[in-house]
Structure formats: structure tokens, C-alpha cells
Amino acid sequence: MEGPLIAIPQPFTDRADVGRGTEELARMLGEPRILAPDVATVRAALQGRPVVISSECVVALATLPWLAQARPGTRVLWLDAHPDFNTPDTSPSGYAGGMPVAGATGMWDAGVQPAFPAEDIVFAGIRDIDPGEQMLLDGAGATVLRDVREAPAALGGDGAVFVHLDCDVIDGYPAAFPVPGGPTADEVRDVLAHVAARHEIAGVSVSAVAGPPDVAAAVIEPLLAP
Image 1 (spheres, one colour):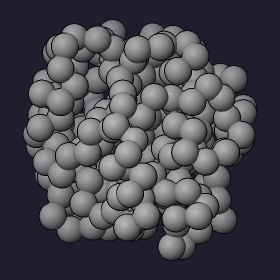
Image 2 (cartoon, one colour):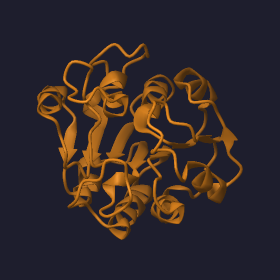
Image 3 (cartoon, helix red, strand yellow):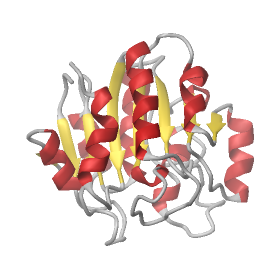
């Protein structure tokens, strides 16, 4: 892909268990630019069709506003066991990693602009939603799917797509917040191959590489063609 390879191995929050594998995956893909875990610094480095390897999904506070500014009209495919659509008021845990998509879409003041349109997000593989988070999603206009195989049809058309992969979407993958009942790695790869065949890939982000980095590398490989 034509764009920087950015790796953020340190967690954005105080969790010490979410950064494993980040640097290893980045090095498998090329020569990464290692950045401090700072949203503003990450956003300043985004250009072209970036590949971002991050310890946590908080990186969406950089990538989604950047897309809204630099690539308006781009849709986002968010592959995750969780929609990360809580706010400080709805989150049962207060964990920042469960709030970035809501912050990036203007559901709470995360200090980032411009807001990315929630209706341009297709969440897939989702199987763990908090009650307050569900209420926000119901009014946001986003598409929320449990079955990742429905994602290509939900994206529709042939416009540009930015893909975010939280590795906990993969059933059985070691994760900080595992949720059973998800797709296999091969099923996710097949979906991404289908998406890449129909859409321009505007960029890729991968988070929570807590298990074997070669699994994540194989899953996103269809997205990385020039």
C-alpha cells in the first residue's frame, strides 16, 4: 500500500497487557515508523493509504477524524467483537479502549475534529454490547452486524473503505477481552479479500495483537496489495 506503516506498541491507556505482538506484526509488514502513544502525533503522520498497527483501538481517535477530513465519503469496516461505542457516561468500566468510535463520531467530546459520520461505519463481528452503548448505536445510524460474512453486502457500491481489525473479532484468538462465538481467521480473511476486490482500500488499522502476529498478518494480507 502507498502510505506510511505506523506502529504504536505502547498502550494509550494504563493497561499493560494489550501491546504484545504490535511491533512484531509491524516488522513482518515492513519497516515501521514507531510513534509515541499520542493521538495527535499519530494523526499528523497519517497520509496516503496508511497501515497502522496499534496496541489499542483508541487509535480510532486519530484515524477516523483524519478520514473525515482527508477522505470524505470513505466508509469504515470495523471488525471487532465490541463496537467501542461507549461514552464516559455509559461505560460500565471507564476503559478508554471501549469509547473511541463514539468519541470520533461526536457522541462525546474527545477533543478531536471533524467528527466521522456514524452512518458510514459498518460494524461486523460484534457480539458484546453494553446496554448504554446499544442505545447510542440504535440512534447513530451505523450498521451493526454479528456475522462478518454480511459485511461486503452492507458496504455496497464500490467506494473507498478503511478497514479496522481488532484481533479479538477472531474466535479463539488470545485477547485482553475475548468473546466466544466469532468467525475464524480464514472467514475474516475471505471477507477482506472480497472487500479488497470491490473497493479501494483507503487504509488499514490493526489493534490488540495479543496472540501470534502471523495470524493477523495473514488475515489482512488481501488488503495490502499496491
